[in-house]
Length: 458
Image 1 (cartoon, rainbow, N blue to C red):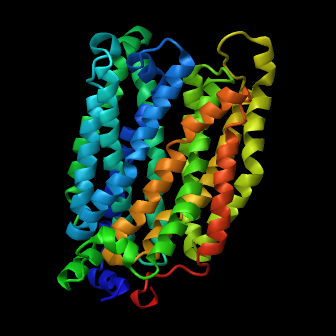
Image 2: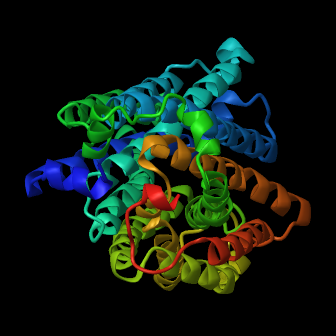
Image 3: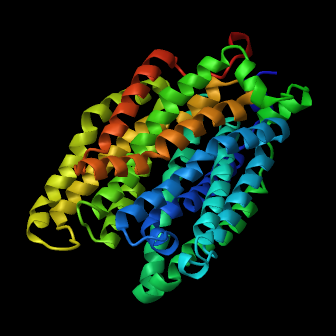
């Protein structure tokens, strides 16, 4: 039975589709909130768990811990991809969201390095590893689940909500941090209040489980299982299925690597740039970046929907090309807007309205570029791989690309800036990765209208 036939026979209603998208997107928001809260609170994490008074050392160690979580995402993709292709999409991402919620709450309970010494950062790293494993299984499960409920002419639009939910997790992390800091006051926040956003993960976990347990299994997986066509060893078959090695390479170097460095540069490098060399007051920087990220989510949905008409390849390739042209100018514009205050003010600065408008405009432009390359991706990857090994085949390259090229970006960029003294020099890492992605995607991705994966054409 073909994918299209399985979907037609399942005949999900409009309310079913809304539940599928809503529950999957909400769970994805919560899971990425859990993962991003570490990066949002990088400064306090460093002060609490890194045994050093040197701010640069703290920053590098914290971003190294950030990268560790990403480094374990591919292993999570292998483990949960195997389970997702063998046991089903629904129950696998129930497990991943539970693991993520528990690991995140655990960070909020770890004593400081002053209390238990080096055991504290070791525990943090272990919890970060568990977060990485969980996230390695989450994205593939949610993206495939929505994709396999969607008709081909709306798949880009429906799955774009999963892509936007990744940004939503980042926005939620900023909102919770700002709200908690304001409600608790600076003294309580510095003492123990910063732990509240981590402990909130238990509440989000309960909501996510309540929503997702109502979902039924993907119609495509149910049809495969009924016909006895599920894979006995999805990991092995991902690399032995005809044509899959080439598809995995394209998904890794042409899709995942490029899209992730654009978004992480816009959000995390943007936040670090403002709080660091631009000396923008911490709360102001978080509000500015959070505002741009919130309004920038519309671009993910816009370009996901556009890809249903023009195909998946076109917006991705154009987005990469425009990023190469506009990446440095966007950051130069932010620096130019803040330069007058930097030259006349000592210590942290509060940007003037004109500077705020320029910064938000530059970040929104970067968000649009990210939306072009990220919005269509869940649909694209689900269409690239055969259903019997889809969870594994798309999760492995996606999480290697986002885990290593993207997850190590803050660490690499910070190191480059510290070595050169040029606040813009870290952008060269992003630029070179995007150049690679442009070449690979222009060569390897298929153009034309979207279509289901066809077994006979593998």
